[in-house]
Image (cartoon, rainbow, N blue to C red; front, side, top):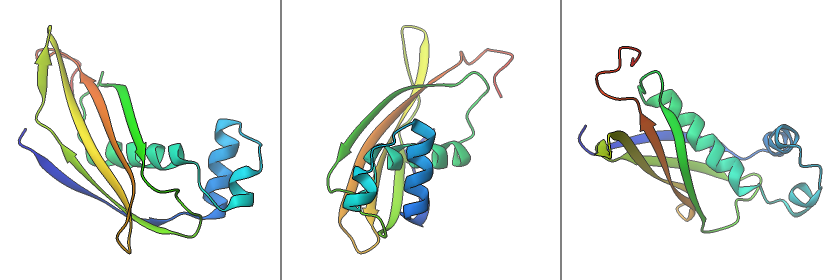
Length: 130
């Protein structure tokens, strides 16, 4: 697969989305809503979800690694956009994997987060691969 850029769209960080994320992960501390800052891993989870919607991964693919760099605190009420770049699939020691680098930025321009996610792929000859 050649290098591929994927537009992951735009969305707004809402207080309701922050509360829903905090409830899902069992975090009941009020610090995020009191300070108006969204949990950075909320954005990483959103990006991975959007990537899963956009990528045609075969059955048996495993999300194996996630690196996240928060550049600026993501504020509730901010409009964001995200772009991802899929690197060509690689193989090492019989395992195939792809890595996706992404950037989440304020629509107005400043980067909020940069990250990298890696997915292990089943062997090419696997009959269960989609």
